Amino acid sequence: MSVYKHEYRAYEGRLTPAWSRIAVLVRYGMAEAWSSRITIGLLTLSMLPIVVYLVLIFLANNPIARAVIMRGSSAILSINATFFLRVLISQCWLALVLTAWIAPRLVSYDLADNALPILLSHPVSRVGYVVGKFIALVSYLSLATWIPCLLLYAYQGYASAAPWMGANLRIAIGVLIGCGLWITLLSILGLALSSWVKWRMMATGIIFAAVFVPAGIGGIIGAILRTKWGLLLNLPVMMTQIWQRLLGVSAFNRIGAGLPNVAMAGALLLLGLVCVFMLNARIRAREVVRG
Amino acid sequence: MSVIELDSLEVRLGGRPILNGLTGQLRGNAIGLLGPNGAGKSTLINTLLGFHQPTRGAARVFGLDCHRDRARIRQGIGYMPENDSFIGNMTGVRFVRYMAELAGLPPAVALERAHEALFYVGLGEVRYRNVSTYSLGMKQLIKLAQALAHGPRLLILDEPTNGLDPIARQRMIQTIQDISKAGSIRLLISSHLLRDIDETCDEVLILKQGRIAALRNIEEERRSHRNFIELETAGAVEAFAESLRRLGCECASFPGGRLKIVMPDSIEPRDLYVLAAEHGVQIRRIHRRRDSLEDIFLRAMENEPARGELVRL
Image 1 (cartoon, each protein chain N blue to C red):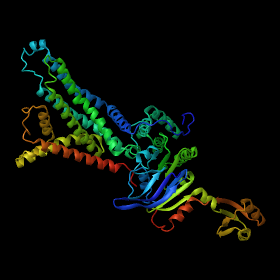
Image 2: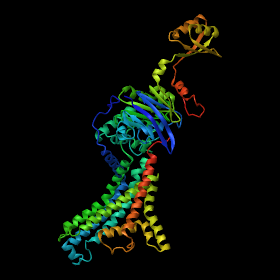
Image 3: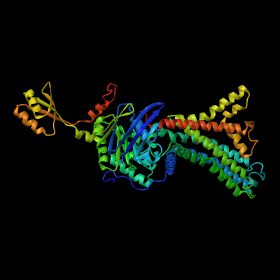
Image 4: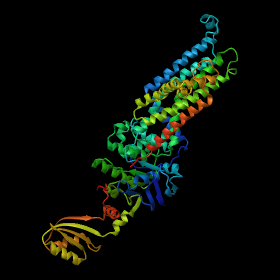
C-alpha cells in the first residue's frame, strides 16, 4: 500500500508483544494530558514547593546560613519526619488538583466520541485499557509526589554532615507508601468519576466534590451522633492520619487520632472497590455498539 | 478453510436469547450479513469480536474460538462500527496510527501505514485535521482507514454506507469492491441495504429473530436461476406473447403492453426482437433482471413478512 499506488497491501511484518499494547495506551494517554498547557502549568506549580523545600534543606545544612539567618539555632529549621510530613501533605494535595484536571482528559475524549468500541476491538482488554489509563495518571502524579519527595530525602542525606539517610529510613518508606496509597486512590477515583461524566469541567468539579463533600457529611454525622466514625468519610483527615502514622509523627494533627488503622484501611478499600465497580460498569456498557 | 464457523451458537443477553442455535460455515470472500432490526447482526459481530460469550455452542474465526482466543482474533480483524466511533480531538493520521499501534504495529510502521491507509480511502488531504471537524462521510472513511491500517485478515464493516449521500456511498462501495478484489482480506459486511450487499458480496447470511433464515452463495444463486426479462411494448402484444409461449418462454401480460418473461437458456434477447418485428410489435424498453438478492431476502423472510422490518432498497 504505497502512497503513490493507492493499493491495499497486507501487513506481514513483525508485531509488538501483547503486553506492550498497554504501553501504547499509557503513551497516548500521557501525550494527551501533556498537550494541555494547564497540565504543564499545574506540574510546574507542583514543583514550586519542592524548590522552597530544597532551599530550606540547603539552609538547614549550611553552616554559614545557619549562623547568619538562624543564628545557630537548629530548632527553627530541623529536617526531620515532621518536615517531610509537611512536604508530603503539600504535594499530595497538589496531586488532587492534577488528578482533577488530567483524569477527565484521559477518559472523557474516548467516551464522548464513543471510541471504546473501536479501541477495544483491538487486542486490548477492558482491564488493559483501564490499566493503561491508570498508569498514565499515576506517572504524572508520581512526578508531583513521591519522586520529588524522595529526591529531597536524597538531597538531605547528601547535604547532612551526620549519617542521616540510614537513621531516617522510615521517612523514605513512609513517603513512598503514603504517596503510593494516595495516588492509587486518586487515580482510581479520578478515572471512575470521569468515566461517568460526559463534560470534562464537570468531571473536574465532581472529583473535588467526591473528596470534600463526604468529609462535610462525615462532620455532620460526627456532630449529630457524637461519634468519631463520621471521620471515616473524611478523606483529608484519614489520609493525614495515615501519613502521620507512616512517618511516625503522632503529634502533628490530633483530629482522627482515635481512628483504628483497620477501620481506615477498610474505608479506603471500600472506596477503591466502589470506584473499580463504577469503572467496570461504565466501560463494559460502552465497549460494544448496541443495536 | 472457512472464514467464520458457527456451531449451534447461542448468545443470551439479559436472559433473552439473541442468537439462537446458529450453525453454518461462511467461506465467501465478501460475506453479507442481512436481517431486519433486532435480527442479531450486531450481536453476532460482537460475539465474533469476543465481546459476548456464547451461552451455548461456539463461533470460530479462521478456526480460532471467538471467546477463548479473542486476543488473537482481534489481532487479525479490522472493525468498522456502525455508529460514530473515533477520538475527535486527534488528527486523522494520529488516530489511525494509534489504532494501528494498538493492533500491534511498531510505532514507525504504524505511522507509515496510517498515512497509506488514509490516502487509500481518500482522506490523504485532510489527514492533519482533527477528526471532529470531518464530515459524516469522512468519519465513515476514517473508521475504514483505521480498520485497514494494520493489515487485517478479516474486515468487519457494520453498516458502512450508513448516512452517506449517493456519491459518498458509491465511493465507499467502490473502495470495498477494490479491497475485496485485492484478495488478501476477507470481508464481513452487515447492512440493512440489500443493494450494498448485492454490489459487494458473494455470499450472504440472512438472520431473522436470532436464527439463520438463509445462507446463500449469491453468485451461484444468480447462475442457477433462469433469465427474467421485463418488456414494455406497443402493438399486437397478445399475439406476440402467444408466440413467445410457443418458443418455450413463460410469459405474463400486464396492462399498458407490459410483459414479464422467463426465458429458457436457449433463447437470446435478440430472438425477442426478431419475433417482435414479425408481429409488428415495438419493444420500447427491455429490462433484463437478474434474480436479485431482494428475491433471496424476501424468500428468506416470507414465513413472517409483516413485522415492520426496516429493509430499504
